[in-house]
Image: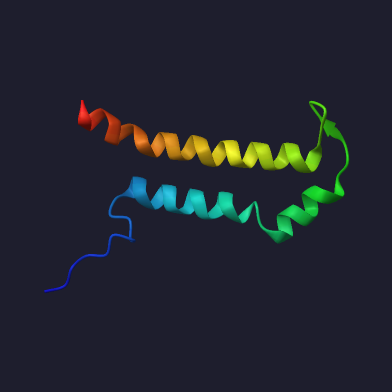
Length: 76
């Protein structure tokens, strides 16, 4: 008997969020960070590098909150 892996998403929604998080975390790694660090305008008083990271991390947090929503509804 083979037990299904909990690391593999079982639904289309799970696959979408897996790809979403891989892409979003990839945007915080070296090749993209090097690009964001070369640009030097200010965004709301922050250097572009910090604004870029704040936006990407906010998008990751938003994805986590959207992923959590169905679990919160099933509890109540």
